[in-house]
Structure formats: structure tokens, C-alpha cells
Amino acid sequence: MKRSPVFLSLFLLLLAINPLQSRSFDQWFEDGAMRIDLVFSGTASESSYALEGLRKEPFFSGSKHVMIDPFDYGDHKFEVRDAISGDLIFSQTYCTLFREWQTTSEAESVRRAFSHVLRFPWPKGSVKVDVYDRDKKGIFQLAWSGNFDPESIFADPTLARVYETADLEIHGDPEEKVDILFMAEGYSENEMEKFMEDAKRSMEYIFSEEPFKSKRESFNVRVVKSAGPDSGTDIPGEHIWKNTVMNSSFYTFGIERYMTTPDYRSVCDVAANAHYDQLYILVNTDKYGGGGIYNFYSISAADNRESRAVVIHEFGHAFAGLGDEYFNSSVAYNDYFPLDVEPWNPNLTTLVDFGAKWKNSIKKGVPVPTPPEEKFAGTIGVYEGGGYVAKGVYRPMIDCRMHTNDAAFCPVCSAAIERMIQRHTGR
Figure 1 (cartoon, helix red, strand yellow):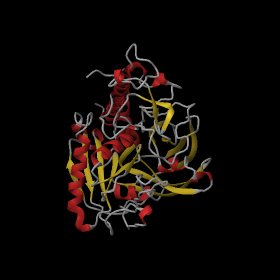
Figure 2 (tube, rainbow, N blue to C red; figure 1 turned 180 degrees about the horizontal axis):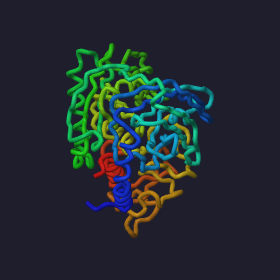
Figure 3 (spheres, rainbow, N blue to C red; figure 1 turned 135 degrees about the horizontal axis):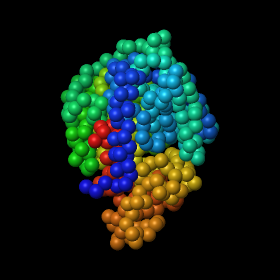
Figure 4 (tube, rainbow, N blue to C red; figure 1 turned 135 degrees about the vertical axis):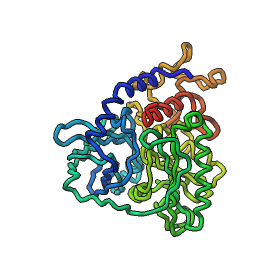
């Protein structure tokens, strides 16, 4: 398969830094993970962070070769530096439900708090952790800092919640694979057999789609049997409330189909039982809905007739940072993609900095912007409509998995997924 210039550039970059970073892991880190629990608080116009606690978790599954995030993705970034030398030894870009909430109308008049968690390999010496938030111009700005000495801090090494885990499909060591972890939400103790079947089916959904199908051996898949008191999930619009492990709910931000959980700390408590790079919350319901947040979590219904499409679509968000390409469905966001800023998502553009996107993949003679006409069907171009608005935001093809439930990933989205797989595996 022909590789794009962006893909090849990343490949060469990873080759160049792999030897250095491999040595750096043993220099700076040891087994296990440092977990920093934070609380976000804020409104539409401002936010603050507060330290809630520390834990020492048994597993860190990320690459030992690429510890500095090569992508300028996400609404947030955190960096870990050696406290003495100032050397950057780890970084991660990500998104949060809190940042999404900040773009809603409620955030204009209400102050809310959301739990958050930072995780990185357990350091051998003192470290400085800096958290950055992306501002309205798309630039990361320092938002919070903390200093942590592993020899003097009190970090609870016990699991907050203990659950049985199981392997669904293992192809290698965690640091050399993308590790997906399915977690049971809204399953009672006597429904664990159903959860296992639902998880296996959802895993097959992902691997039935390219490029995941061809890259299957780049992944490991595990489950956490996180049984809870009640079966199902909250449906506030129908006055249905359930007592579940991770406190999931439909009607996030008032949108019926948007199912999430603001309780990220509980999500991470469950996940700490196993290796993971990507978290997938599988909810025991047949109601249509779900969500996916980059380097945060994916969540979807297990039993809806559209579950295959939703599972794959939401994983595209959470794993590869792909943005929504639709513009004709209701959302709660206000100006989620400012038209004077280039989106960080690899499959969306406002043409502010199109050269950093898929410009080199457009064939000669294809107009920019590209009219959605029959003659351009299956052609990479610049089609207006995406990111929840009909004007000013553009997508790579007329249709794609990130646009509708009926299409496969387009070449631009597929290339972004392949780059992310390589970031985790080095191949």
C-alpha cells in the first residue's frame, strides 16, 4: 500500500528516536505507573486544577521506545520532566469530557467540577509534571504544575477496586502492542457470561474494519469483569436511574444519544486491574448511543442494532483523534471548531493551515474546496461540512466512517489510524 508523505515522515522520526528513548526508559522509569488524581473546575471561560491524591498502579502498558508524544493532538497535554536536569522524559496529548462541557451553553452560567487522572511510568527520581490546556487560538498554555518525589510521597499501591480480568486476544508484550481493555458497565454478577460474549463481539467489530483488520496482530485485547449492583445504565430523559460501577448515562449535555460518564476516576479504578492503552466501556443496554474521547475512553451500547457502526466510530475518536465529519445532527456544543483556527484533528480542516493536513494527497485537477458531485465520489478532496457545522469546516471525502454509519474509513482517516498504531508499536 502506498504510504503518504506524512506517514513516511513519522516512520523516519520514530526510527530516529527509538534507540534514545529505549535507553531513557531504564534511566528514568521502573515498572508500574504513577497516577495523579486531579479535579477540574471551571466555566466556559476559565478553568482550574486541584490535586486530589496519588496512587501507585501495577501496570503501565505504553511503549518504552516512544515516550514523547509525536502528535500535536488533543485539547490538553501533560509533560513529565526530571526535576534535576529538566529533561523531558514523558508526554501525552489527550481530550476530556470537561473541555467538551466548556463549549456548552450551561458552562456560560454554571461552574462545574469533573474528576481527572494523569498516568505515566513510575519514575525513579523526582519529577515535575506540567499540564497544558489548548487556548482558543489552538496554542497549548500552562495550566497546572506539580512536583513529585517517589521516595517521599505517599502513594497508595493497592487497587481501589479489585475485579477478575481475562485475555481475549494477546499478540505480544504490552509495550509493543496497542492494548485495548473492555470494561463491563451495567452488568450484574450473573451477567458476566453475557459481558464476555458482548466484548468478543465488539472486538470482532473493530477488527472487521480496515485498517484494523490488516493490523490485528498489532493489538492485545483484555477485559475487566466489573460487575455492578444494577443492570443497564441511566436514561435521565426516561427517569431511569441505575447504580453502576462507572456511573454512565445517556443524555450527556442534554443530547439523548450521547452516553458518557463524568466519573473518570472510577473508570481508572476499574482499568487499573489490567494492562491498557485504550479503554472501552461496554454498556449493557440496547439503546442507541455512545461516545469517544481521544486518549480518554470509548463507550457504547452492547446490544443495539447499530452497535457495530458505533463501536468502530467511537474507537476512531478515542484511538486516532478523528473528528466527527457530520454536520446535520444535533449537538450541545457552541463553536466547537473556531473557523479562524486549524483543527488538530487529522481529518478536519478550516483551510487555515491545510498544508499540515491531507493537501499532498489531493490529485491534480481536483478543486479546493471540492463540490460533492458524483464525479468526485471516492476522490480525496476538501468537502465542506464537518465538525458539526455545514460551513467553514471541511472533510476529506464525501463519505467516511466518521461521517455516516454506512461507510468505511476514508484513506485520510485510515492513514491517521496507521500512524497511531505505529506510535504504539514502532511498526
